[in-house]
Each structure stands twice: as structure tokens, then as C-alpha cells.
Amino acid sequence: MEIYVGNLPWSVSDQELADAFGAYGNVEKASIISDRHSGRSKGFGFVTMNDDDEANKAIEAMNGTDMGGRNLKVNEAKPREDRPPRQSDW
Image 1 (spheres, rainbow, N blue to C red):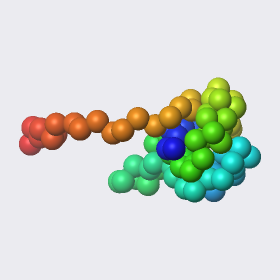
Image 2: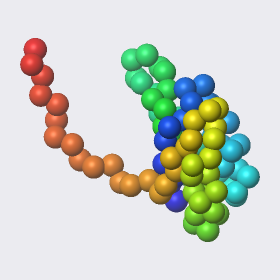
Image 3: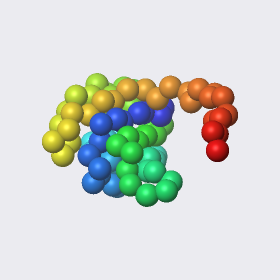
């Protein structure tokens, strides 16, 4: 199951995110999404856990908890929606 984690502090690393969720089960992958131009965190990321029961426990336990002074928003990730191509005014 892929888990969305929002409202992350800018300073959190992939490893810190994996460690936080690792308390609830085996984390296959954890990644913070960063801006492609600046490299700065966008404040959200994704955690992949193979066991749905462990993932659901992690979602329930981590949603609303404090990390670095921010309350996390944690839920099952939804598939990315297709967006129309950007129109440029240039």
C-alpha cells in the first residue's frame, strides 16, 4: 500500500520518514517529494508498505501526530489524476 504523508517539516529526510513509519511494520520505500528546480522539499511524501494491515495501523497511528512542530496528514495515497497539459502564455 502506498501512503500519502502531508504537512511534513521541510527538514525531514527520506530516512527519517522511513524510521517513523518503521515502528508499525516493514517500510519498502519512503520518499520526500522535492521541487525539481530548487531541490527543496514540497512538504509531502510517500511511504510504501507491503502489508496492508501494517499500513493501516501506521495510517491510524501517524495521522495527526506531531513531527517537527507540524501535525501530519496521513492517508492511503490516491492514484494521480491525469491533468491537461499546461498552456503557456509565452
